[in-house]
Length: 111
Image (cartoon, rainbow, N blue to C red; front, side, top):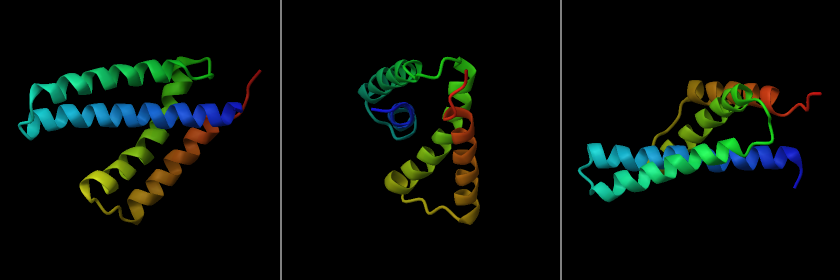
């Protein structure tokens, strides 16, 4: 698998872990779900941290800066699929700008 594919795959899987783990804790606290939801969410959030650390990008700050753009897009997709949210043109434009920023930060190979 090439470097770009690895970067994108790790960002997407890490993002799903962060959003999914946070969502489980959210539902425990706000929807009166069993404590199992919170514990499972915490484990998934820890997995997010491990996945982010596996990035082939060597600089911590650069990984998290680029991840922020990916997270924005994934959060909107999650809200559409899980919550039935309908993004407007400003949501979509903002997501595209964030995604472009993430690509500019993460994808060029540097010496």
